Image (cartoon, rainbow, N blue to C red; front, side, top):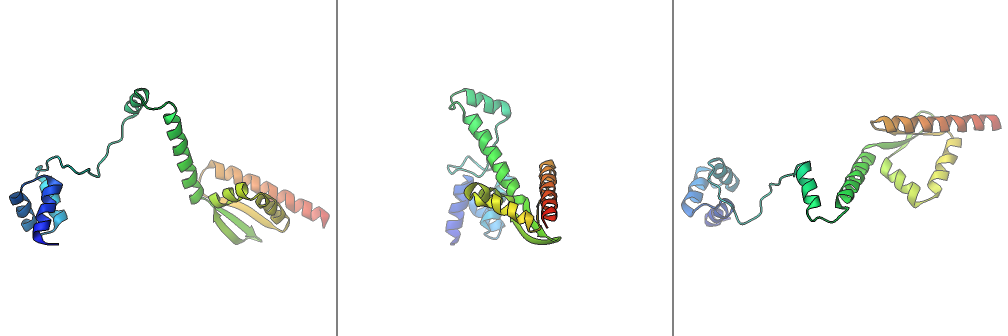
Length: 169
């Protein structure tokens, strides 16, 4: 990039004149980013025509006022649903569904894949039940009380399958 283009870029980004942009670039050895930062620090940045990367998050009161002042009804409920869905996807990708046999790990998948398998392919549940009778044990590795409750239930199911298998054999 030529020096003239650099000066023009700093002028556009900071809203300063040619001399000030050139002086800032010369002081920073023609490093555009450093020149922009230097001008910003000197509080000489004028409002630029281009959008910036800054944003503000409205407070809860402002959000409620804007919701009652013309936003479609239910948009708050939709946003809440989307937030819960995002949270579910993140937590289900962090937690692992682990399959073990004789204390040795056979398979570990994100919980989201198992949940999708249960909904998309009905045989997944039956395969998991049959796996219990072949000595497979399932648990979820992650944090939280829900994981502990699910692991307890899966442990009880595995114990029941073991006792049925033992009584049949």
